[in-house]
Structure formats: C-alpha cells, structure tokens
Image (cartoon, rainbow, N blue to C red; front, side, top):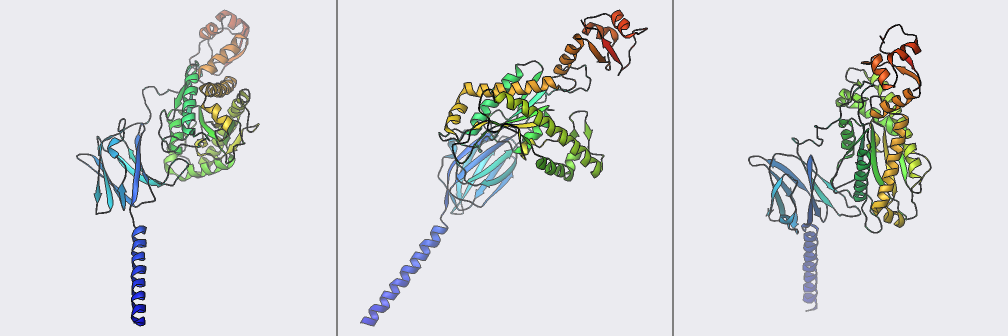
Length: 454
C-alpha cells in the first residue's frame, strides 16, 4: 500500500508540473492588447498610432478600388473602441476591425484616396508605452503652399522680404520633454512659434513661415527641406530644454558644430540627389556638374559661411534673451543637431528655458512670458539683419538709402539711371554731374559715384 501511495503521489506531481508548464507556455503566448489609438493629421501625411502592451509582429498592405489599408497585428486583441476616433482632416473615411485566425487582429482603414503607407514601432517614453505607428503618406498633397512663395532676385534694387522659417520642435506622437506639472514641450514651443511668426509678419521687410502649425510630427530632415523650399534666409528651431534634475535653468542658443558640418558635407557628397540642389538659394551654385573635390570645397565654404552667420545671429539673439530671462550659458553653443545642418541657410536652435525646472515650467506656460521670449528672439534677428541685410531685400535697400541720404558713395546697379539715383537721394542730375565731374548723364553698371549730403 505504501508503494502504491508513493506511485500515485509521484503521478499527481507529474500532472501538476505538466499543468504548470502548459499554463506558463500559454501565458507566454497570451495575446497582448491594443489599449488605445490616436490619429494625427498633417498637411502631407496622417499618423495612426496604436497603444499596445508590448512589441508585436505586424504587416500592412494597401488595396485599390476602393482605396483601403489593411493592418494585420499578430497575437493581439482589441481593447479600444476605434469607431470613436476623430477622423477629421485625415484621408480615413471609416475604421473597421475584426479578429483573425483566432488570436490575431485585422484593422481596415477605408480611405478617400490612395496613400503610400509605412509602419514602425516605438519604445515607451515619458508619456506613452509601446506603440505601433502607421503613416499614411499622401503623395499628391504638397506640404507647402506655392501661391505665396517668395521670388528671390539678385537685383540689388529689389525689395523682397527676408524669409524666416520657424520650426516648433517635436509634435504629434513626440511630446518632447515633460515638466513636473505635466507641461509638454511640443505645446509650449508651438505656441511660441506662432507668437514669433506673428511678430515677424507684423514687421515690414520680413515674412515668417512655420514648419508645422498644428499638433503633428515632422521628421528632422523634412524640417530643413521645408526651409529650403521656402528659400529661407534664416531657420530658427524653438525648443524647451530638460535635465534629469530640476536645478538647471536658463535660455540657450545653439548653432551647428564643426563636427556636425563635416558629417553633413560627407552626407551631401554621398547622396546623388543632393548634387542638383542649389547652394546659396535661387541663383546659387549647383553641385550637379562638379567633381567630388570641387563639390567638397564648395560645400565646405558654404558650411563655414553658414555656421559663421548662424553664430552671428545667435549672438544677437542671446544678447536680447539676456534682457528678459536668465541665460544658461553666456555664449552661443555648438552641437550636431540635425535641424541645423542646412549647408546654405544660417540656422539656430533656441532653448527657451528648462521645462524640467518648476519655476521655468510655470514661466513657459505663461503667454505673457512666451511673448517676451519671442520678442527677444525677433529683436536679435532684426538687429542682425539690419546690420548685415541680405542683398536684394527691403532692409538692404533701406540701409543703402540711409547711407545715400547721409552722403557718401553709391555703386551703380543694373537698371539704374542718373535721374533715378538723383530722385532717390533727393538731389538733381546736374548736382550729381557737378559733384562727380561728369560731362553727361550716362553711367555704367559698377561705376561708383559720390552722393552729396542732403
């Protein structure tokens, strides 16, 4: 009897162990859950984000007539109501979902036009857990309006606006840094960017453009592409700094480092599509017909000039910021930020303060404080461009006029006549001829004449 009892005891033990293993294996393969979803419409794409409990296997494919996107997610169950998602501003007409193969999930997006899809997964951050991201890229949509793009002219007599492209960092699924009270960097910098845009557009001789005007994400390279499409004279990226401890505070201004410039030069030379790009904007130099050595030299020169100009405008901005807030560092810092890597556009990154510092978080949430910071940034920009205005701009024209009114020299430009020069300088043709010893009113392009003081 004792032997029989021992046999049964061992038998039940084997059964218990086997059952435990089955439970453990089943738990390891238990379906994770789609806990929520969000839709972020942007001008040229829409981002659909699924909150998931862990990393997943998935596949996507597009169908036509009618246009649809099918998203298959393995070993997942749906724990969210996708029908309640706001679809406005997106190409999505309806979202359908159903279990598939017993333990998988199929989500179908009914679309109003064809899109180019891409998908990837994101690791947890301060605000979200694991996420599956699906981008619906609308290739027939343009991220930029074309009807009011500036026309740049080399003629020094033209009076175009100075174009400042303002980049609000982060956006959409990327909240940026998050303050102790839950303030999100992406919201603060978008508000500041819009304030700065308004200030710039209210000043004659300037035109501001935003890389984003809503809560959506633009990848870093695309931000500089937008600046090039707008023919920017200056690119300003607005951020709010953060640190692992709450003590650091103060505003900062960054320009591109030489290390970042070197890596970007190599990238431009390596990618053939960059060769047809212009260095120096419209009317600049194309790399398409240059060999590697010459192209490298031109890029190095352009990068060096761009960095020097960036540091120059950064100094002006930092000086103005020092009048309204504490500075984190006394001078312009340099780093290899991707958004600063345009080889022909002066670019600065402004850290408006530390959102991780409780006091600065409260300040950054204040619209009055945001306006003071924005006014300081524009004050620095305006001081810089009044000192060194780009040729062909209204500021350059006004500066030349002021110099002419005070007397001095003027270099004849294409299209100038002596009578036009006389009118602009509030004098007469006879006075200009007498002052310069001219026997007639004919002048040549490039000729320098003396302007009598008014």
